[in-house]
Image (tube, rainbow, N blue to C red; front, side, top):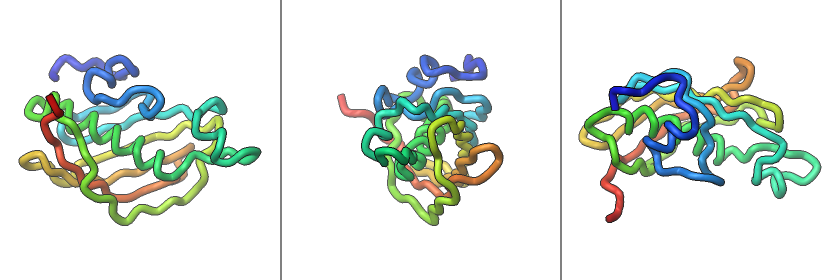
Length: 150
């Protein structure tokens, strides 16, 4: 995938990863080094589907969805490399995750993922989500890149 023009919008992201509404959690990719790293953005709106139940009157983005947004950003980085184009990214592990601040309506999540290792379809990446320069979540993601089902 050598013809990628930054920033990548949702349509371009959907050309790389299979996620769709309501689980597509990355609005834009603003930095990309295929197979190495990516920086994505998620604008957290008051209309997000998960705020209806998490929590009524006190909307907070679930931590697992912050991790999923980071994983999707990492998937864009990995799957934009020619050798992995068309693969499906699956979690193999989540290590050392810490949540440092709540993410609420009106926040913009900056999702930074950098590959520490990516060989033969198995990878590990450092991942950090920030809001206004303040860390919201961080940890390491381990994943497998596999052929999608027929």
